[in-house]
Image 1 (cartoon, helix red, strand yellow):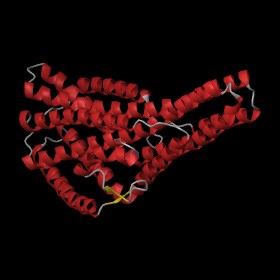
Image 2 (spheres, one colour):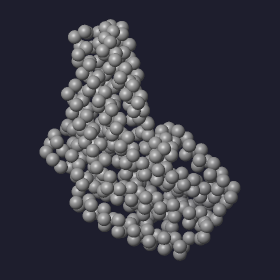
Image 3 (cartoon, rainbow, N blue to C red):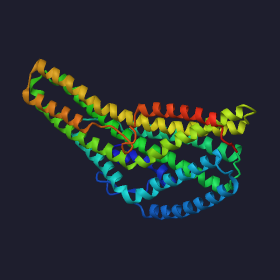
Image 4 (tube, one colour):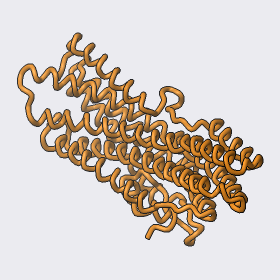
Length: 378
């Protein structure tokens, strides 16, 4: 059913077009398709920009009129508005100016698919579609839970339209994170296919007449591996502002919500407040876990190629000891080490498992500080 990358992306992309996070449409005949900017999406983005600016003005006015000065409530709401604006700017506005990086990365991945298929690599496009649908299902379940609790259970006193549009911006942020994770998953899936193909060559190395076939596989996979590393780095760089925004928001809101829970438990924690606080924590924690998990998975699959090449080299030395084949394996390994595919947020912090540990430590530390200082909670 799913025969190429574009055929895989399209069943999922409607979600991001719907929320305004992906202003591209597919053009061209089958086999030479590519994404281009949509006039409709550009006009929609401009309308959203005007509405967002109006939303910011109304939000600032509401905060100034209703929030107690220097309260934690004022700080939390202000951070939320800043986060929403950054999210909109990165998800919608910047994509109009730097969207070519994303479309070229997707095009580059599609080109590698064609090259890999020529050497017998079989890509499981259905798996990519299922993964994308799973991401959407999980995050939008949490998001609907948050919207329902914020609009129905918890009444912060803000006008209904402000709360509705604020939840739209929250949905936009979540959708942008899902888009990043899914694009990264597609890159990691191709690293996995490359590793599997090289492993199949290990079993053929004992046959001398298979050496030429193994050479072709190694040369093709080495070029594809380099291009996929480049695509992953471009995707990371394109979404880095959203990632930083998500990490900072997760730290601030998780710490604040835990503090509210702790303070209200001293008296009586209303059910509506508990639902709202837990949903906020759950959404931010899940987005960070998905970001880290997707980057970790790509990193592991990209660097697993070195181990596979090492096994290949050992088998070659045992059966044939082809010097030319060993040299190609060595160059391929050095290429992977040179690219050193790791992910970071402009060098501020690495995007790996250590990020989760650092966030947990920071939340615990500042939660203790908040409890000790006991700021005014409205």
